[in-house]
Amino acid sequence: MQEDETKNCHSRCVGDRRPRGRRRLLSHAWAPESERNASIDQVVNRLQSALAKVQGITLYMQAAQDITVGGRVAKTQYQYTLTDADQNELNHWSAIFLDKLRALPQITDVASDQENGGPRLNATVNRDVASSFGILPSTVDNTLGDAFGQRIVSTIYSPLNQYHVVLEVDPRFQRGPEALNDIYLNSSAAQEVPLSTLVNSNITAAPIVINHQGLFPATTISFNLKPGVALGDAVDAIRQIEQRSGKPQSLVTAFQGNANAFLSSLAGEPLLIAAALVTIYIILGVLYESTIHPITILSTLPSAGIGALLMLMAVNLDLSVIAMLGILLLIGIVKKNGILMVDFALQLERNEGRSREDAIYQACVLRFRPILMTTMAALLGAVPLMLGTGAGSEIRQPLGYAIVGGLLLSQILTLFTTPVVYLYLDRLGGALRRERPTVERPASDPSSA
Image: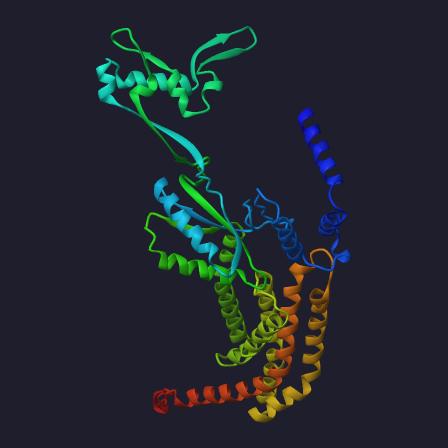
């Protein structure tokens, strides 16, 4: 507790001595969004450029979020993991991938959790020298274990507790390779031999921490995106590095955290859209007792998707998961334009005997006001999502822009494209019905009745 209070006091004193300009910069980063004129990414870039001049440290910053989809903590926002059963092979390829990822123009702040800068003393028993003194290699191993292994040699029991007796060299003599010169072994001739005489020692680099992914050693390379770069572009660039690297089959690579959650949601999105379209087609086919007219209704959807993408491109927003949800919502909103026109046209054809051209024309004229009213109601409902500000507005804006852009373009195009598609598909259906052979029933014989 005393140490924590000292640290807090020290941090307060250091904070009080900061220049006023730097205090304003830090307080600006913690100010509410309504009081700021910069996004969190701009604030992070400003802090990084200011703190890059501090020598002796490497600072990694990322925007803190209330909800972290991936649930994985790293130095930067997105994580890429390499896993291998062979630790040496993992260390070799981790360094290669780290250098290649740092050279990518799409990402920045590339960091690794691999720490191989720890010194390690390798001691190998010189069996010839040891045998000349009559010392067994097992004796050398036991001596090293007693000196540096913290071996429990006994346990002292008391009425309330128990205490382990640990055998080791005084920590003052464990701080360097010269400790081998101060440890002696008894030879067969009762002669004391220094341990350094019996072993060949060399200093190499060793990992300070060995991280694991499941059961195997793993290295996590984390990175941030550069301004204006989509996560999908960065993922594609890293995948290309994998294909050209020639890595062994034992080295397994995968995205983790937020990047993995993005890829998982992106992989299931086409299947979800296809399932929605198939369900709508089946329901409409049963409703209108036709296999052609549901296609006419579904023909209104491409214009909505194109409008949503154009709107996102115009405001420089990524096709994120939230934007994809907006496109899914457009499937249910936009198809009602085709339903209103096709349903009314079919009623005119079947009940009043109108021609297909006259029926679809009357449907466009008489259903224009309901179509416009329902479209404007949905569009105006999405405008607050698109233009809203405040806490959490960034996650809602792609949804609003996708809905507004899709509805605007679909409203303009569907009134012209849907009648054309209706006429062509209706003619195609009529041609198919005429070409289908009909089976005539044999006439009944009156005399057999």
